[in-house]
Image 1: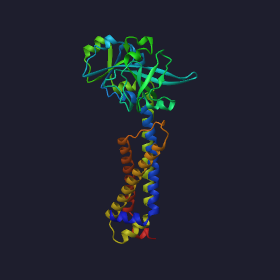
Image 2: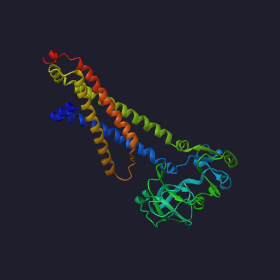
Image 3: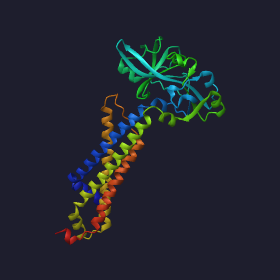
Image 4: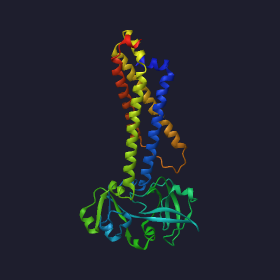
Length: 350
């Protein structure tokens, strides 16, 4: 390792180039990954935040929550460790006579385990009070604002805000079940879904004529989510593989350019093992530093982006990507080491 560090200090330009390439490739991969995960997150963040084990829909809904209508008397037959009755439907806000804002209405009891975490203001407690996603501030709404909707003649009042709660990429407006039921005549004395903690009792499900599925299955059935997630997963996966291979080849080629240096070292009696370890240590140090620098620049860029840009930081995935970049760089270095051990000092010095 001492030999590796010494050479890095003496050839800063050469090793700086390697670090720069690793960093640039890393920025590309980390940034696009963050955008992809961010886009996937805004499609279902409001559902993931429920932290429910199972979600039950009407048997005749074809796994579509917007087609699911469960009489509230039947819904109350479902039992589990915790149960939350849910109303879910599109909600169009009338911002002005010629301007509207698309949102989703989530109806639930204010003390339900699925209730949102209020980041500003308070939870709704009285009729016609709501908690809205704070992205609606960009549309001019604030605490105390009155909401007019196209689905109901009742005005709603914002008493609290929550953060990053979206469904199908649209902001969510939370309200109590009775207020949600006024958003459509078909929802009178009904709910859309039943979220549970723990496994719901099958007799209760049969009695309510509903079918339970896991939260993941529910999210996958949101229109467009499964196809989008698969597309992004393949895109990011291909990007990681191609970038890692490019790094490996780049390190291999640059290391082979030091054939003459390897020949001098072997002529001085330095063994293949020492040369090999020096190359591997150099590659490990540079690739780790470049990956960490790429993450730091990516985070800085994300912080400077407009608030509406869907960007998420999946630390575990970033860690895996960084590890893959380091491993492929080391593989490229390992192949160059194999070539270095076969160098004849006399030929290399000619």
